[in-house]
Length: 180
Image (cartoon, rainbow, N blue to C red; front, side, top):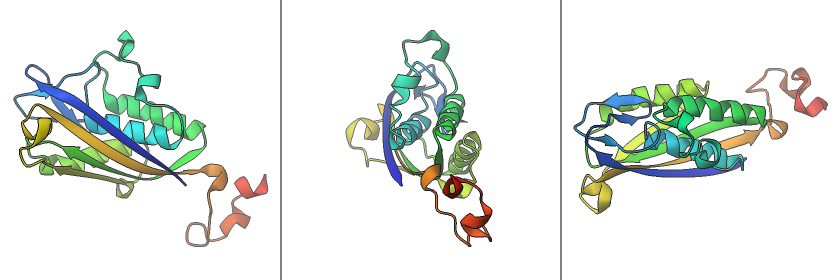
C-alpha cells in the first residue's frame, strides 16, 4: 500500500469563476491561478502523484507552460489517472477536504465526487469530499483564499491481493501478477 498526501491553496479574486472539484460554483470571487485554479483537484492530483512517487503537479503540468493556461484541472486529473495506470497502480480511495469560509459547499459535494470519480474511472464510493471552515481565522477564514487537503491510498498492481470476495476463483482464476 502507498499513501499520498496533497495540499493546495489559491487566492480568491474578482473576475474569475470559482471551480472546485470541476464544479462551477456561483460566487462573487474565483480562485487565481494559471489553470482553472481548482484547489480540490490539485490537492487530489498531488496526493495521487505523491503516493506513486511520481513527483507533483508542477513537475507534470508546470505553470510556466502556456498549454496549461486556463486548462480544466479535471482534464489534468484524467492524465494523472492514465499515468498511474501506466505505472501499475490501483486507486483504493481518495479523501479530500476543502477549507473555505464561504461559499457553503454542501450542495455541490455530490457533483465534485462524481467529477473526480469519473475522471479517474472510479466508483463514487472510493471518493470522499468534505468541506469545513476555519471559524473566521487565517486567510481562508477571512475569505482571502481557499485551500484543500487530500489523502489517497494506492496499491501497486504487482502487489494486489485478490481473494474470494473480489474474484470467486481467487488468484488461480486471475492469470495476472501471481502467474508471472
